[in-house]
Image 1 (cartoon, helix red, strand yellow):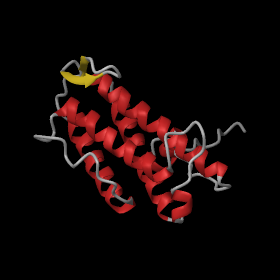
Image 2: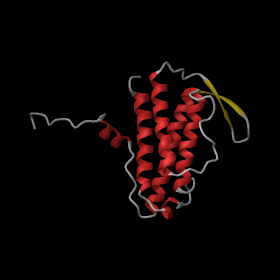
Image 3: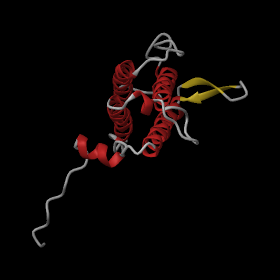
Image 4: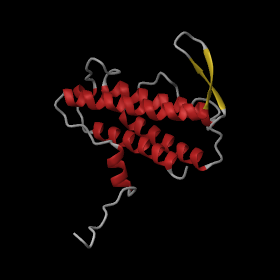
Length: 172
């Protein structure tokens, strides 16, 4: 699999960090904005992304003896940024180790049912979930007339050096 999982987790961490950094420059009115079809306000969505990722990571890695912070804390951007750094380093350690993607963790369904879920699915959900909600934030920003940050995989590849410009061929 090479660097594939590291690229996925690296993009996720970078994109969340870029979004948080971009949002530091916004006023409170913009952070509190929402539009129909999105999760909630920008700040609520950022809290949701970070808290959910911690939950997914907690269940597939057992990196902490218990969930790493109170789930109902309404923290601001600085604390969310600190937590994003901690999550990124935990993903790095987990992916660098001898991970068992079939290790089972627990998840609750919408009706309260309990499911046994392989770690590989928690990883998949963590990445999908964050992408979906970062898109919500970009939608809210666009609706406010604010150009959102480029958090695409292409931009991640460019800034991380995972994509380089090919020299023009001698025949051109």
